[in-house]
Image (tube, rainbow, N blue to C red):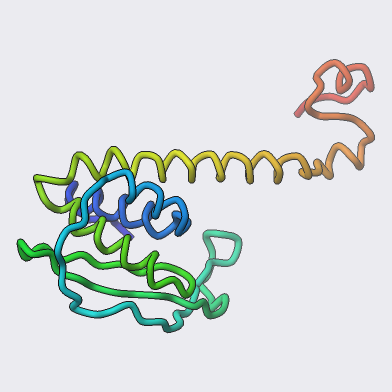
Length: 168
């Protein structure tokens, strides 16, 4: 599938993903750092539901239904008419509300830079650190089955050559 998003849409996709993946506490703390509370009206108050999670066999193969997950969604409109939306996993009305507020504010010229700096950048950094920690923990349990069968460490060139194995 070819991604035909405009640069503006791609940027919005990125910040929406960052907001959706952040924890409620992280977003709440970042929101407090903004120091303002815009006026808004609800288009759709936070509501809970479920969605089907799809996956691909082997990460790239045929798609299949993995299971259902709880989802919270909402929509709001700022006083200037800008609309913000949020879809977050779990049952957190506050998370969805803050994500929708940030979405709306990020679309405005007046508040975009501040919200990007105070909310999105710290959330993205925290998520990158979490991903790195998870990756490090997962890699610590990695097993090289080929090396186990041969009784050597393929990561050590010296050990590999000392056993008389030929690299292919």
